[in-house]
Image (cartoon, rainbow, N blue to C red; front, side, top):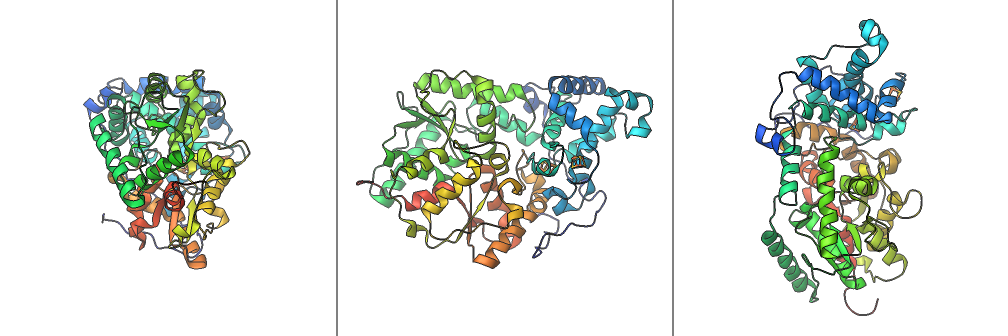
Length: 496
Ligand code: SF4
Ligand code: SF4
């Protein structure tokens, strides 16, 4: 365990007293030159970095009207101050969303507003210097870009967009984050974040086929690079090996098998996650999105379906067509892209899957809404589908389901604490403390309803909870994949 105290779980959420500078020491490792250069950024801090950073900021506010409006419209009402899990868990006032925004806004005002140019001290404008850059590096890596604050802001100011812009500026001057940029480089050259080459992938999928046959007696295929399949599945690479992710992948395979759908995974585009979004880099997001397009064309598929990954779905749902479209070569009868939960939900609605809910009777379940799904995307063809569909799948798979308290679910959900490119061991203190509001809500569900397990549809949330739950006295296997529940309950073979 790292050298810090895990916060105490309280029966009800409390707004903590402020502790100035409590997390000033928290910084992720800086990317080395070879990592930076591989993804198109300078290897280290460039000589004329201040001017380049100021120019980049100008470019970003010119290109994004939303960003400029967010920077110009805050009235300091304070409604967001107690809404960020990183403030609630760390007490550091710079983790209040408005304070995080002001780290950026103060520089924007100095160089891009008349008042800031001529009367900087009157409008909270600051010169850009090394101290500011250090502060940015620390606190813009204490934002998981979860958008919770924007739900409570009367102007809808989205700190996530400001955080992405700040990270893009830092990358542009040569100060990038090791964890994100190393992963982006791997995904761009090998096809997935883990750097798994085709033979390793094939070996893994064949092993899973053997496991399923051993357990069920039914041959269920997990095809790789199968030309002419109808569906290209884009799963997060954690699904290929990590627990509980891999149980979700087995669930997708069983759904496809039982519905008689032909599908394949691509070794060329074997990653749903797109870390380009975390660093605000359109160019890097596009490289990964293009791989998906190329794989779909090469394999001749008719549909693209995404697995359980929150930010992957945010990128796919919002940007895939812009980044790599048009996808007019796919079958227009299906949404593009489609989420695996939409596929399963549709089959359940049509009674095309036979489920034995009692297979999950050893668990009492709750559901963690992943922020990128709940607040930054949709599912299905009805409003709020992204909140309803996963719950309906869980309820179709088990007999015992209870939601956590209302302030911590659906649009108000708390981030797991490890999203936004922060799922790295050099930030474990931040991750543990930032997960406090979610852990308190879970504990309430445990105490009130006897909840034993929490389901999620995000690869990062699952990894984060597996690591964090023991810090709070719970077991790492108390987090499960939604399609793991489906996998347990689905009845293979025979008539549906
Ligand atoms: S986007 Fe999320 S992590 Fe970032 S400041 Fe807002 S509430 Fe905090
Ligand atoms: S809620 Fe919105 S307007 Fe109010 S302080 Fe926060 S960012 Fe500013």
